[in-house]
Image 1: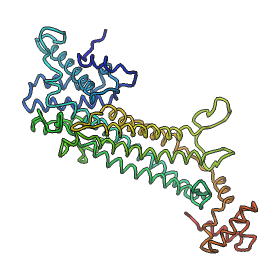
Image 2: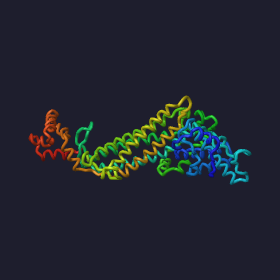
Image 3: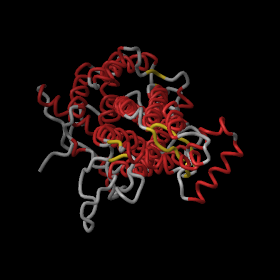
Length: 465
């Protein structure tokens, strides 16, 4: 039977939270281990315990950071207590792995058995020294979120570029713009895709802005933000070591952002960072707004690709799989629909995060578990879905210029373009006649000898919206 490194507090939590829901995000567990490693180094520098204990805690934390011992964190993400149980789970696992390390490397016996001599490394006295659940868990959310946000920023850059390439490719394709789902004015397909690229670029700027909120931690605030039991020397040291650890274990993009001067820092006032979770809401809302606009774009693509014979058919999406188990040859817009589902999911997560942040009372934002679970999920799945959306949907889109031109010619969209020449009231009469007669607006204009066919063509060619 495999050894269990977690202890009494984790065993109690397993009984108290026997819920069939997913466990904690692996990124959150790694972030806790990174914080514990930095704290051990800082506590040693502050003179709080020996080098041997520091080295053992660091080595144990490194094993967790490397992805080992995943089965030692059995708790569900659904729990009360501000996440104290998962925090103690990590403290116990690190302490017992550290004790095993000390037992192998010293003449003292491995002190893992119950009874007898107590452990060399204690989960509270050593692993948790100068810390509290209340400053560690929220900080761990941010430590986990930053590399995820960096990955999302890279994905958004690629998505914007994919839209921009299509914009250039489709720049000369005239089509019908629609407002209120009604025929409106001429536009280019390239103009529409260029607009999508700009939407993504603006959201990318906002994600970059809110990422800065995730770089402000309140490690050292301990239980209520007033730094009880955390010395100034420890506080200054823990950030120094944390930034070294994260830089060494981060993605290339994150390392580059660190070299550019971005790093984890302590908040100017740790009390409000402990008592409020509003900053998590701001991050969540930025992700939600991004997904909302991406879902709108996805819905646009579904409409423009509708058909192939009975819909708009202005663009064609790549066939990725069979669209029906009963209708042969049917192709569904599965990836745009997935982006719609992404928004539904992230929007629901955002509501949960808002309510959890609202659940703070007095000196503690107590509802940390749902915030950690839903925020990290939102960032992670947004990056994953939009990455696939860019690579397997946007880059494969094909335009149908003839269909675009056909629908434009059958519409009354040219009326707005001709209004400066013939006046609003005159064009209003022509539009009514067009709709009543079944003729095209071009045919009505030419029949009234207002323009020749060549003059009409020249006017259309000169119009590049």
